[in-house]
Image (cartoon, rainbow, N blue to C red; front, side, top):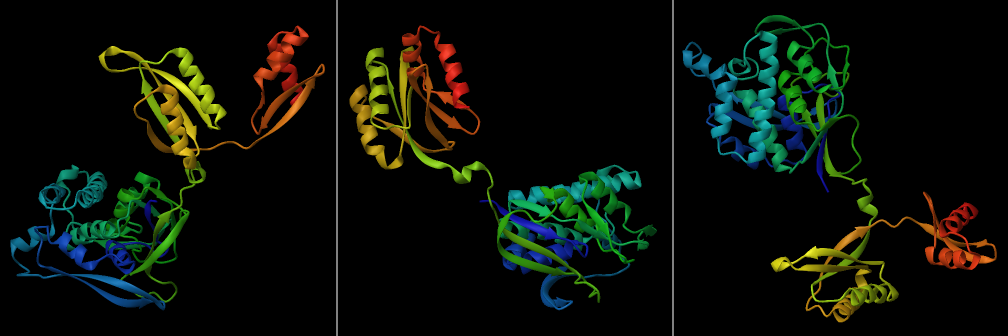
Length: 396
């Protein structure tokens, strides 16, 4: 089973909304706090409060940054970190590997996109709205929350966008902002527009999904365990301003889920003649094995040898292990449980010039019983290929 989180961004997305949604879905706040405490970033307080958006109970994440002297240069430096610095900080911090890898991939994607927009190398990108403390807390907090919920796979639905223009540190920009559109283009993220002139999706919120989502689209086949709602700052009248996250286990649709468990038993022998080995196969098949076969191998000291394999029902492991040891004289048997997918088939007989020949009929092929065909071929004085061909045609 794979733990999956599906993000529904029908009202847009932002870093704080994503973090709040994961906490609302059950991510342990203490674990998030302890992972964040490994970062050399203080002067902030992260709190979560219960709220409502259009009547939907949800959680809001609040990052309060403590400002010292507004005019000091330290303050400016503190809030405009280049990506190079954030990268070094994440590399040095004592974080769980997956948290560090995920956080770095979010920031490096953001830096790459912002660098392309502003025409500067990614390492030199100074995060304004993004690089300040709250963005670091949002991104690393989200990665910590994913870890707390043990999420392996992330899927996101189409992301809502506003229209008109938005104000930024660079002046008025089109809405959705250049970084948001560039991030969506990088991963071909599905989006849709809402009749709203606010910035519904922020660069941080979109970068988290662009960097971390395994795929985009409808909710995957899964058994749901929890759901969380992360509230945005505003409470719109017409729609719940929340990011919804649905957490659960994916249902495995591969044929594995329908496999029939069987036991594979094996012995390696280097001192048994070919006649005895062949007889062992006959005995195993006669006793009701699903299959039995021999592979040539090379054992210690370069000795040519054989492995005898038998596939049997799990409940008959004991008797087949005994039979294998008895027939080959081996001093030990090894085994494993594997799965098989037998294709359903029916047995029938056909008549070729007065000789009845058994055939197996499955969805994809008709298989003629070779021994029956060989017997008929001798009696009729025909090549066995001719009898096989006629029997197959007759069965079809």
